[in-house]
Structures are given as C-alpha cells and as structure tokens.
Image (cartoon, rainbow, N blue to C red; front, side, top):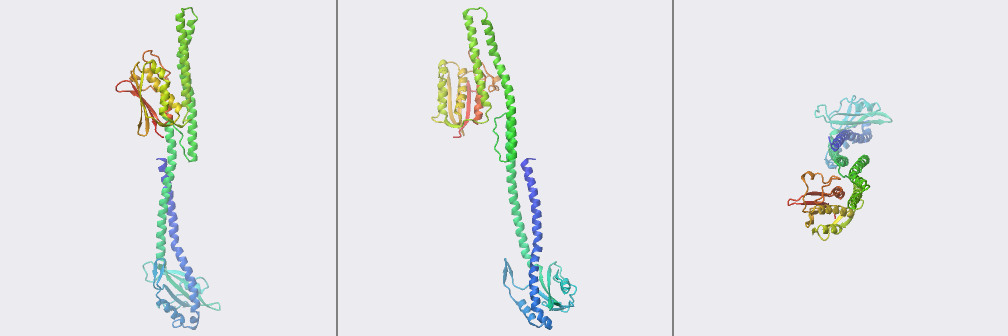
Length: 477
C-alpha cells in the first residue's frame, strides 16, 4: 500500500469514528436538554398558578371561582404565535388540583374530577414536601408513545400543604424543535466530515509528495544520474534526504577516488613506458637523426601526459558538481564565434570550410565558460575526423522549448562496435591518417556539461555519411 493512501485511510477511519461518536453525543443530548428547559419553565409556571389558586382552594370554590374562570379564558385564547418558524395557535397546558388526600378537585380538561391521584409521583412527592414531577403517557389508552410532563407545586397556608397543583404539558410540543436541531447538527456534521476528509486528503498528498520526491531522488542516484536534493518542508523527511545526500557524496567520493587512481594509472602507463624506453635508448650510441627521433617521442609523450592530466583535472572538477556554480545570461552566438575563432588554425591546416546557420542572438542561461569548453571539444573532434578539404556544417535552431546545436562532419563515421562506448571516459577512436588517439575525455566532459545545464548531447552517424552531433539546451530565457 502506498504511504499516501495508508495515511488517508487511517485519517478517514479516525475522522469517521470521531464524527460518529461526537454526533451521537450531540444528538442524544438534544432531547434531554430541550425537556430540561421545558421542565424549568413549568416549575415557575406551576408555582405561580399555585399561588393564584390558593384563595379559591381554601374557600372550596375551585369549580366556579375566579381561578376557574381565568383558566377557561386562557383555554379559549387564540395565541397566533410563531416560534422560530413553528406556528402556535392553541394553549398547551392542562391544569389539575388535588387535595391533601390526592383526590382531584379541579381539572381544566374536566376528565378526571374525583379521581385518586395520590399514588402519582407528582402528587405523592409534593404532599410529602418534595419536588414532584413525572413523565407519563398522554392518556391511559395512548399507544403512540407520546408522553406528557407533569410538574407539581404545593398549595400552602402558613407553611402547611393543603393540596397540589400540577401543570401538564405534552412533550410533543418541543419535538419539532428537537427534530430541526438534530437535522441541523447532522447536516453540519456531514459538512465538517467532508471538510475533514478534504484536509486529510491534502495532508496525505503533501506527506506522500514529500516522500515521493525523496524516492525519485534516491532512484535517480541509484541510476547514476546527476540529481539535485529535492526541497521538502517536512523536517523529518528533509533530514532523511540530507542523510541520503551525505551518504551518496561519501560513497561517490570513495568510488571516484578509486576509479580516478585506477584510470590515471592505466592511462599514464603507456606514455611513461614510451618515455622510459626512449630514455634508455638515448643512453646508447646512435646516429643524430635517430637520437632526434627519440627526443621528439619523449616530447610528444610528455605533452600527451600534460594534456591527459589537464583533462582529468577538468573532468574531476566537473563531476564533483551537482549544480552550476555560475548561472548567468549569455549570448550563444558570441560563444560560437569564440569557439570557431579558436579553431581557425586547425581548420586552415586541413583546408576545412565552416558553413554556419546561426541566429543573430541566442539567449541562454548557464555557465558560458563550460558551454564554450564543451563546444570546443565537439568542434575539435569534428576537425580531427574530417578529411582534408571537407566541410563542417553548424546549425543552431529553436526546437519546441529548446535550442538545438547541430554540427556535422563528412568523416568516416562511428564504427558499430564503438557506438555505445563513445561517451565512456578514456575511450578514444584512432584518428584518420596518423591513427593517433585522444585522451578519451572530451565527449564525457561534454555530457557532464549538458547534464549540469539540464540538456543532453547526442552523437550519431548521418544517413548520408559522416557524424552528426546534437547539443540540446533549454531555452529558459
């Protein structure tokens, strides 16, 4: 399973479980909270009505007294109330009063007059000086499950409890508010869950993207590519990347030193052997012409050693870079003019003509000095393999988002056995005519320069003969 998917699924599970339990707690608390608020209001109303009914109760005139008439007028009222979007037109209270024996003496519904309520909690507890309340079905025959709340208050005289007034209100009265509140909470809960999932998706993508950058970097290093340590904001991933980079540098440094010494020893062995052999022969008696030949051989091999060491130092400095040390805007046209001028003598010596198609201005970003060295190596190779009196064709053109530099010679081309080796360090083909070889570092150097600039180099045989070198550089200006 991918890291991002695992993180997201884990976050999703936590969010769903947390949302489920939190929503359940909120929803489960709505009904009790609404009924508690209703009960609180009923307590106040019951005690107020108990005081109002006291005089008629003491006079034994509950049925025809002022209290009875006031309750009748209350029940006949048209309320025309709109409570948070719900209309209310009829009163919702029922009032009954019992004496100290628990016998109903007054009932606003006139249904239970004379009945014994002494065992109902509202009456039973209140007669004993406690808080009397109960929740019961709306009627004895009720089957819908609807209940009503009964809140009682004592009717007193000089501290003595004479009877009990109970205020009854159906719990169904607050049900619309409860259901609407539940719906709002559930809707908000779904919205919160969706937002949480979106945040989780973003966080998962961010984490997995940071790790994926590091994975891509590690894979590029494994393939031997020139890769730059990616920028990541997550501290732990950043430290891991820095550790991988440090390990890569140390391993590459160790391997490079080993390869460098081995290659240097191998490449220096041949000229040193030639110098040693010529030196030993010079100690013997020989004609001056032959002596001069051995002296020239020593001189040539010494120059070869010097060039080899210079090239290896350049290559070593370049391979240790991961990024360009100098990055500036320059004109490629001027660089090409410098390169061709530096090779004027070699071109004239072999009577080679240069045909160029180059735009007046070609803006590039990078290290102009390295580009100049790379182009010089390419042009030197083309001159070395071109027959006398031939033509070199140099073309610079815009291809998509890149500048393409193409140099074609009319030489013998690349043998099939060498096509996969021409970019290897120290691999060199014999030059036509004198069969001499170069250091074998030129094309390897060119490839390193192109890689540092985000470009590439291709060298292949032309269909009509000769070799064609393509240098591709991004046109980022």
